[in-house]
Length: 338
Image 1 (tube, rainbow, N blue to C red):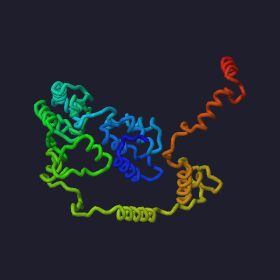
Image 2 (image 1 turned 45 degrees about the vertical axis):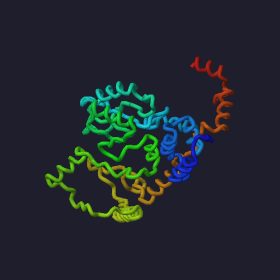
Image 3 (image 1 turned 180 degrees about the vertical axis):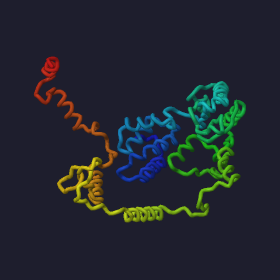
């Protein structure tokens, strides 16, 4: 096992894996990748090997996930990831100009880091904040309605050691500190989540509802949120009530059924039109049998990773014998004749 990672990281890795059922430990891969990024600042080859070992996967499986999501960085990244939206809406409002200004001011291009290791700049396709455009984020916290001047002021303050306050959200943290949160651990900085609040565009719908007296019928804002046990109990009761309300299956009639032309329709052996519908109990039994015969995929390695299967396949391929006993040369001649 790699010696790069601290005992704290290893302990947190065990805590993350324990959040999932034993046969679903593979689901812990995403937070584990954030965890290794929190220590190194990116997902290094050592981080991939670490995740593969603690989950019993191979490195190719881990690498496939790490390269799919853009939040996992595959090379060293600055303390502050500055993302500028250059998609349609923000671009129309000046997003590309903001990006170009920062690129020239910092002396870096897309996915590049300043020489002091403080800032990594990237252009983002969409930051899901069109009503606040043009927007940029610093470690995924929003700075709304920016222009070249305000954006330049934000990065200058970051490089000077400051922590400018986002327009919305909590106080800024470094990329490594953010990765710890994305791994599922609380931000323990003093007052880390004491600030922030929703923006006016976000509240616009609420304001209009209040202005015009629009409300959800029967909604009581003081209704307590039920615990999981209470919610599960209520769901079970509702399901039992629905099952009890289902009508009993109709008895099959022995009388012939008249067709559209008045003639008797063909009847089955029991004297009824077509086969009778299965009883509810039979349907449930068939469903249960289908579920039992199609167990969900496990977290084990694919069949191709098994040495025995690989050797058997290679042996069969080498033998080159098809179902008729013809070798490779015979088979190709047979195909040509056909």
